Each structure stands twice: as structure tokens, then as C-alpha cells.
Image (cartoon, rainbow, N blue to C red; front, top):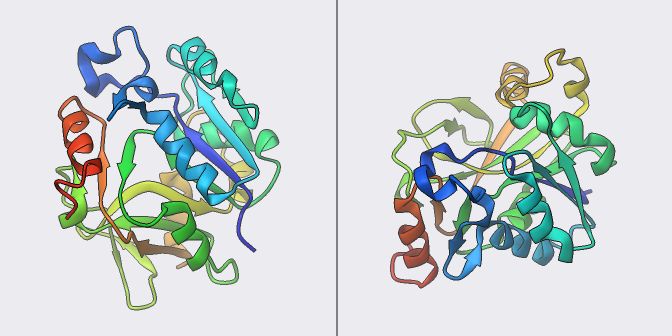
Length: 230
């Protein structure tokens, strides 16, 4: 059975954006006339998910005001400190109220198939504790890394210079209760899953653009306009 809840990560400071995030949070930066958080919400709504949680921290009032018109969205405000992906997800668990869950970063745009629906179709909880949506390097725009994971023939992952993690996944959350620190990365859960050989990946059928830096705004707009889709 596919998850019914999604965590949208929207709490970061967006420091790589420089002056663009001095007075505006990154999730409200517009790409092709639409705020990044709205691009993410459109994917969530298309996937038909029943429960949506958005974490906030930096300039939280602006994000929360922007989301006031979405009654299905629940807010998990991180204060006084930013909790990173693992700590943020752990704090939001009472609002998500289910396990496993989708998570989706709010600082990217996509073409091709809906990333959440792709994950749902490939999800097999009997074999998997986590399923990451990966992007081949030729389809990854605005990202200069060498890659994050390599998949075997069955889709089981190991770390390496292969495909790029897109910021979309399905993850079981029980192990979060064992993490003593309030702030930590989901990499700690992934490491456990890698050791038990229960972390899997599936490749995105389309293109993706990381909008984590100023140059990514124009690259993302070009991608969405269909002028650079491979």
C-alpha cells in the first residue's frame, strides 16, 4: 500500500541563493511565474496525497502566510534551531500520522512523470525501508555533483558516483525514534538501510533541475518551457 502523507522540506536558509534570500525564503522564489513551493504542491495534489506537512524555520511567517490558502497543509515550525532533514521529519511525525511517508524537497522543478507517482508504483515495503528517486546525470540540470548512488540490477543502492538523489523518496520512519540528537540528517537512516541492504532507488522518467543557486532559476524556467528537456 502506498503512503498517504508527504513531508515537504521548506525550512532551510537558502544561503547559496545569496541576496535573493536576504528577505525572502527560498520556497517563495519564483520559477516561471510560480513559487517553488507551489511547484511542489502541484505534484502532491496530482498524486492525490491526503496529508501534507510543510516544515518552516527561516522567515517562517512568510511561508506560512503563503500557504494559508491551502487548508490541507499542516505546518511544522522548527524553532529555535533548524533540525535538518532527519530532525525535521522526526518532529513532524505526529502531524504526518502514518508510516511510511513521502518526502519531497521544495527547491527543484521536474518534467516528465510525476515523481511521487513513480515512487508509489515502485514501492515494495516487504523489501524496502527506503526508496529514493534518482536522476541520471544527463537529465540533472543545475547540479554539478558526481552523483550520489549506484543501483544494482534489483535497484538496491550503494553510495557512489552514479545517479543523483532528486530530493524525493518514500521512507519508513520507525528508526527516527532511536536518534537522540534533535538535529540530524536523513543520511543517518540511509546508512542503516544501506547496511541492511534495504535502501533502493528508481530512476526518474524525465528531467529535473536543482534550484538551489541563482543560476538554477533560469535553468529551471528553460527546462519547464521545453527548451532543454534532456
